[in-house]
Image (cartoon, rainbow over all chains, first blue to last red; front, side, top):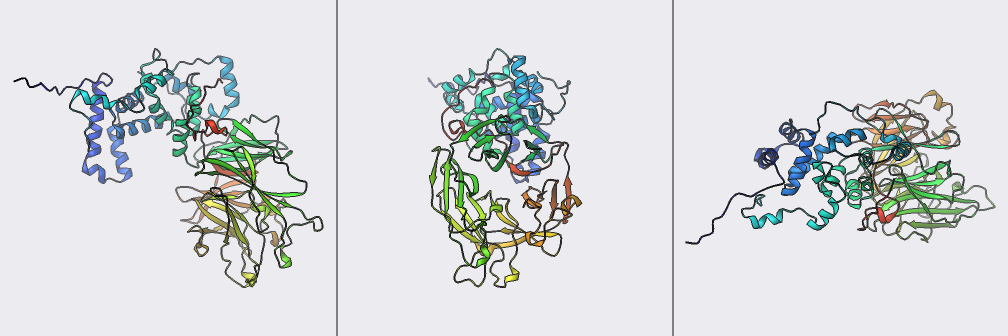
Length: 133
Length: 438
């Protein structure tokens, strides 16, 4: 009788299946009664378990997707975990894992290195086995 | 709980994250999308990630390419990063010889790192007056009218307009952030030396000597100095620079005696950075009228945002740390720590007779309280020699060793931040930062 068919399918071109599953999965955990009762350490442990097999680029994708979808708690987790993995890594590591192309000239880089030597010292050694994509 | 998955395509438009799509697209232009799919990360997500990193990692990130270099001046990042930062860096100032070196470390590090200061050639010796929100206030030791605000991590610095001092002035300093006015302020209290008595400190003559004292305050926001009245007491020079607690700078007065008092006492004078008023508080244990009960304060400090006072013991190698549990309430001074000291021999031979308790021949306190960690350990500096962590639970001290630790002239806790001494980029304004070239 002319009723409009309502579709329940929402296209999300920015989000792939794996990431969407992770977002939904995490939100399910987060909204559980038992999770809300946990202490801070227990919550962290549970989240660590959930994200155990995520690699660096997975967190970046997760951050992008959860930002697009407005899932704030997932976004916070993804950003924090990305930051934790990035801490104390060398400039070269960051370039490699973010896929950033270095467009400084060697002279410019040398000048930066002289002025900020501390930024290039004491970083974790680059692990060549870290995959990117 | 609102649903995150709207049931109609019309509502999908509300999923577009803030800020508006236009500014998002504009900002995404900063990141060439042809290089990597991860450049789809919107600006504010990158800022979110970076704001959770220690300052070293943030700076390293901005060094990856020219397009990302200006991020260190991004107002949103500066503000968000500062709000997440803690006082987790120790700045160490070493004079070696006749040249100042500046180092930093995080207590969890293995070694000490050196800053290359942009004014190394023009200002070879300087003193650090204070650290606030990641900015240091420096005074040129050779030409004290030249003073600077400096962020050691971003290397930005700003020379404060000169305030001429008359010869023979004794100056007490303080530096801090006014959160209400969003302003960095420098407080200078100057006394003129009376030319008939060499010493300003004639506190034992039984009355307050009303030497003229002037308070001058520099505001970064106004970029000018203003005269703000006088201090009714003489302040001890060893209590300069003032200790910042509760938006107020604190110094200790000389021994004073008010008309209704039976004996001399010291007071703590505070300057409120928010409303520019002066106040006074009692020192710990000053309600005793018995003259020999008065305890000697060696210095003030901040522990966990509370004002505290270090009082060395005359009869043994220990000192007490009294904490003002409730700010402004004189009766709330409580002795929280009683710390035993193991003086290394190299320090003991410099100690003056008991009157100047525990100060070396240069008048510097032998042991200084620097701060407290989340674990409850109190960090001490044995002047020039070592850093020590005191554990109040088992009353033990352990030396903190780091590679490359220089001789310490000054040490202080510092927030590693991106705050710029140029106020228009400090993140307290809404203006966008200009792109800089390296």
